[in-house]
Image (cartoon, rainbow, N blue to C red; front, side):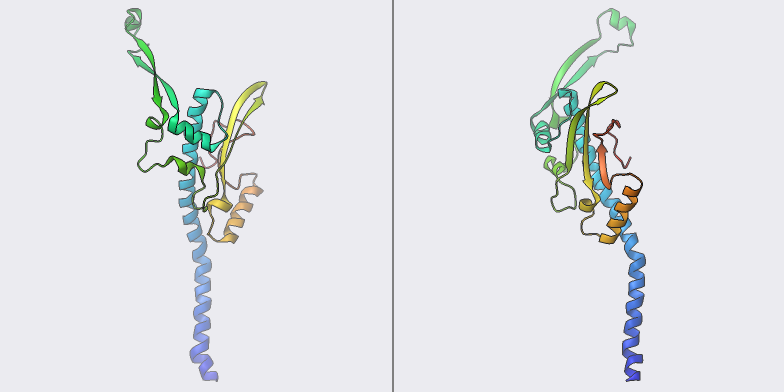
Length: 201
């Protein structure tokens, strides 16, 4: 019996312990790599929303808090571009009325987010989440006596990192919340103007 334990069972236990030690070292490294990759994809999606929100505000004077109507703005909306011939810095051309400005309407989809394989409907969902929606809010807030349009779009780590090590996600969320930061990716803010910055920038 001792021989069987020494020859068969003990090596299996040793291999099992070595594997557990290796996984305890390797898993956080894999998690950090996956976190980096998923944050990159998530941040790009939030940047796309920011691009559309800024264009929407330039036309309507406020941000949009509904992703479906933001997608409709991309598909069917138009923005006005000022086309200028000549330079306002050229005083001779200005004096001779050779500098001309004209406003031109261009379809949003022909102007913004012109990337290969870009699909507008993708801005509705958090990547890797199995279809969970991106959280989008838009408000007009009084700041120092002035009404300021604000928006924020966010994706919690619980959704963005779905399928990864749950304990490591809990640790990451705790690290963020304990320092007063959002537990995920966010662009813009409805609590205070931040120039529509992303919290990863």
